[in-house]
Length: 267
Ligand SMILES: [Zn+2]
Picture 1 (cartoon, rainbow, N blue to C red):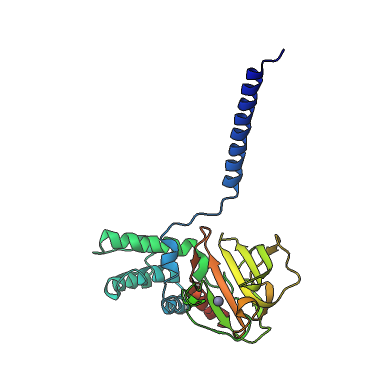
Picture 2 (picture 1 turned 90 degrees about the vertical axis):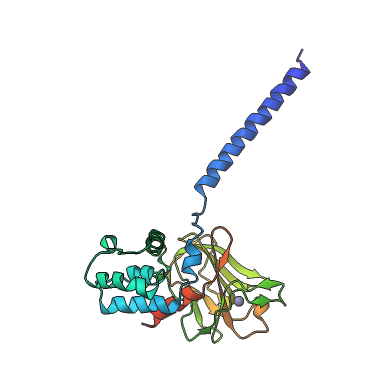
């Protein structure tokens, strides 16, 4: 005859073993599918960068190609003009960034410049022609990130790019189509998980490109849809709401990136 106590304990052991294996499998799956983590200093630096400064450095690089614009930008965005001048002078004299004589620069500032140079190298938002400007046609936009919406109930988590209804919208980068179709606020909207791990959000479209399929790849410059005012934009002029969400769920200000991408698209 079976001992009921024994079979109960065998059952418990089975449950524990199963739970353990399940948790191990879950951890392994999560590890494989984890989005890239981002150091906390990356986007505060990149998304508060002065657009004019980026453009100035890119322009300067165009005039004297031996000086890299990332070197210039890392130095100019981190130091006062007085501290930056002797370093830029050395760059002009063909001294590589790694061999610069940092003269009397305090170690903390030196560390900052080097870190900023590293960020600019790794995150390619400002690199020429890497990311595309999303509106293919005449558009105007302001820095309205963080502005009140619905009487202060929520904040504006993106940039509104205004233009004529039907203006083509293109993908700013390559990635995977994660969201497609209607939602209450966004109307006809497309969400792309970029190859860089960020989520890019295109909302209020008049029409979504019929060739897009959820789960499929999209490349930089591919047609996403046309500008409209669907969703909660129904009472406003036609515009694209463009948002950038980091892998940790934080929405950041797309404005400085958009300004630089637009600058490139106009050259
Ligand atoms: Zn908006």
